[in-house]
Amino acid sequence: SYVLTQPPSVSVAPGQTARITCGGNNIGSKSVHWYQQKPGQAPVLVVYDDSDRPSGIPERFSGSNSGNTATLTISRVEAGDEGDFYCQVWDSSSDHYVFGTGTTVTVL
Amino acid sequence: EVQLLESGGGLVQPGGSLRLSCEASGFTFSSYAMSWVRQAPGKGLEWVSGISGSGGSTYFADSVKGRFTISRDNSKNTLYLQMNSLRAEDTAVYYCAKVRGSSRVNAFDIWGQGTMVTVSS
Image: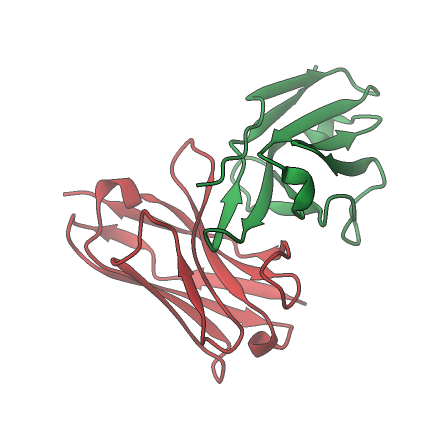
């Protein structure tokens, strides 16, 4: 089955840039989506199709995808950006949706 | 306003059954694929099952295949998850989620608030 690997945690100072990676075999050939989840809340879509943002999501959130790694970048990090972030793809070989292992972002 | 509202969660004994519902509003329900995603306490997101807009195609994670059934009633704008032979490891918050477009490769753009399922004796 297809596996997506994320770092367990990322720490960043306010105003700096956070980068969250999502590793998967030839993930560059798939559409990658990213979700933010705050404690006690449902996930929220922040980036879809590798690099597009839903309406209402700040331009500070951006994404890229190439080779075996997709990356979510949060620029000018704010305290409100804390939470758990998950990458996700559709794996056509298994007809399964797959979520990454999740990354907790902490703003120092 | 686009909204998903889950119900049906609760406490059930191992081996028991439960049916979850997800009522949709604010969009043309029959035009979109839907899924159930769960999250065990303190754990990450796990996709459980998906269904096409018409209901003609269904998909299941290996962990629930043969035990769970997904269905939808487009006349009632409602998604269902029938869970049988429940195990302790099925304990989780269950979210319903709307697929953004018509293709399975699309993201989940709308999520419900979740309903808690606890499997315990």
